[in-house]
Amino acid sequence: MGERVIIDFETTGLSAMQGDRATEVAAVVIDETGIVGRFQSLMNGGRRIPPFVQDLTGISNAMIRQAPRAEEVMRQLLDFIAGRPLVAHNAAFDHGFLGAELDRIGEACPTGLLCSMKVARRIYPEAPNHRLETLIRHARIEATGQYHRALADAEMTALLWLRMERKLQNDFDLPEVSLELMQRIQTAPCKAVDKCVASFKRRVWPA
Image (cartoon, rainbow, N blue to C red; front, side):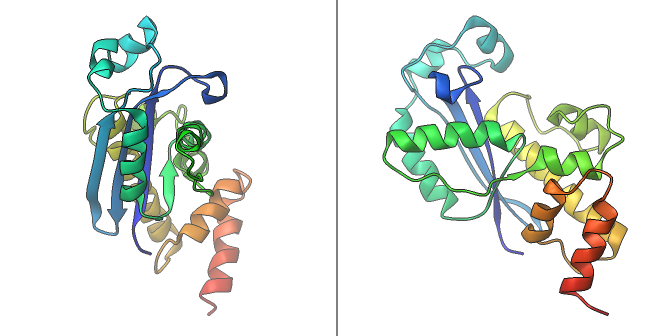
């Protein structure tokens, strides 16, 4: 299947469109063996972090004042991604900040981010909810660090993604789980995953 990059941003708020900025970014590379590469940096976008966000993330305004400029970090991130497919948990949120921060340095935003939350809604419909922390507990994955910090969240999303790939492979006797299949699953009706996978399997690996 090749390498995939899981990305996560911490931010000053919920909306890049309303001027919120990224405060930290992390990305981890996975292949079939697990996590094989990591990138993490705080980043200074020149916007103050509200107190409730500081409490949530543990990232303070003092930390951000000492951080590299956002433009520098984003160029390093692009080099790290190196054109590989991207995955994020609640991808619309991370994609919004990725696009806004890249736009500030005149770079195009990668398209087609895969969303581990959407896939999890279909693979684990019985989970109490589909927040990352809940899914990690539900799938019995050991937490790797503090939630709401970019590297820990990226690592845990990576482990969740790999667990979902293996579950699909085992449940449906698949030779592999491709990105194309994950794309199809994340847009399939939640109660039609079996049909989605069966149709894909017949097309790609006909008997």
